Amino acid sequence: MLSAEQRQILKVDLGLDQSKPVQYFKWLGRAAQGDLGYRIKNGQPVIEELGRRLPPTLLMGLGMTVGVTLGIFFGIVAAVKRYTLLDNTLTFLAFLGISTPAFLAGLLGMYVFALKLGWFPAGGYQTPGDGGALDILRHLILPAMILSVTYIAILMRYTRSSILEVLFQDFVRTASAKGVPSYRVISKHVLRNALIPVVTVIGANVANLIGGAVFLESIFSWPGTGQLYLDAIDSRDYPMIMGTTLILAIIILLANLITDLMYGLIDPGFATHDHDFQDGEDEPMTATAPVKPEKVSVKTPGSMALKRFLRHRLAVVGLILLSAIVLLVVFGPLIARFGPDEIDLLNRNQPPGGAHWLGTDPTGRDIFARTLSAGRVSLMVGLFSTLISVVVGTTLGALAGYFGGWVDNLIMRFVDVVMTFPSIVVLLTLAAIVGPGIDKTIIIIGLLGWPLAARLVRAKLLSVRELDFISAATALGANDRRILLKHALPNVVDVLVVFVSLGVASAILTEAGLSFLGLGVQPPQASWGNLLSSAREINILEAYVWQWMPAGLLIILTVLATNFLGDGLRDALDPKAKQ
Image (cartoon, rainbow, N blue to C red; front, side, top):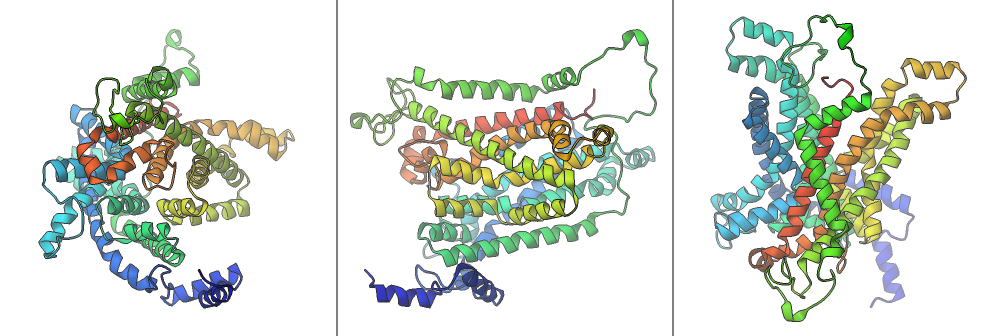
């Protein structure tokens, strides 16, 4: 126990006797010179510790190269073979990859390929006493490939969409009409024009790659910056937390800079094309067919949107599946035979069967009851945090989009600053500062999810405010508040509906990740994330699969169904969708 005099000396040595602004600007000045301070835990320089841990993380990031290559390749195949069984299969697998969080993919990969098949080591950077390049590569392959799974899925979706948009342009038809082989048409004409949005996605997802590395380094005991960051959070080592956050933010900024430079290499110099036809149309409309008056029928926007939604089979399946999951977790207490926190020490670690349909955990609690209870918590966190994001994002986006000028510049620059930092790093830092809990988790996720909503609302209002009915309302003397609330905002409902459907899925994954690391919902209250956290122990991961697998499957199914639903709503509510 330090005396008051010793504490004062320590505060002076650490600079804590000065005001917070002074401390911060002094830290910035030292950081600009490469001095990030010293670790509180062991007194080592932060920059040296990061120098040792960054190479393993960058090595794992090589999975990004594999993800980029395979994602673009599968996207090309899906676009060329559009609406075939192969396309539908690749699309489903892409949704499955997007819906599986990195930590769950890591657990499944370790369980199957390391523990059951024995193809790869179950963790670590190298075998003690070996440490050769081949040994490190053998340890690297599994976590690197798992890290690339989500990247493959995202890039496949964007590549397919972008190629289909270019595939039916006039210059592509001209090249085909001249007898140019199909592979040259794709590689020389289509791909170069379609890669610009794909490159944008690659740069934008570097932050997600870093987030995935944090979880996988924890699961595979990989000695990178992610594991170092988690250790710093656990020990409240703030110099290390700030230093790691700064370095990761710089990496993201460099990735965005490289993305901008890549535009100049990829852009073939064509002017921006007007895309007047939609995904999957074989030909643009070249003439307007005569309309027979007796066959004209008046359809409301709602009926047309419903028709488009019902034609989207995966969206209908997603709606049915999501409804079934919600009903199951909400009314679970009516069918569960035990309470979620009911302890039975005489039936510990029992496999599924008998009275316990999904088995029991190490304290004899019923897995079925706890999984359903966890589902209620995870869905609640997903819904309410998304509503917070919608309220904050809609408010700021509406102000920026409607008023424009300095208001728009101020708000959007703030959005850019927020989006610069890796979301998972900010989430973990805030969770460590404010502490765990359901209410705190909801607020943290909600307050970090609003930038996308703000951008979507702003983009929509920038076009809506130029329409005739807004000009008419202004001419009639309506004030800005009335125009914004009564006329402009109702036109962004379609964008917000899609955002909510996809935002809930993202929030569920975020909560599961925080709880998996012990920074979200805390036991004995169950959530899908903290039920999965027990699988970080190898014996539970291998021998007691029933204790973590049900929560993992429900996460995948819930997020998969929500993504299907969001995709269908996006198509149904698109006013330019094909009738």
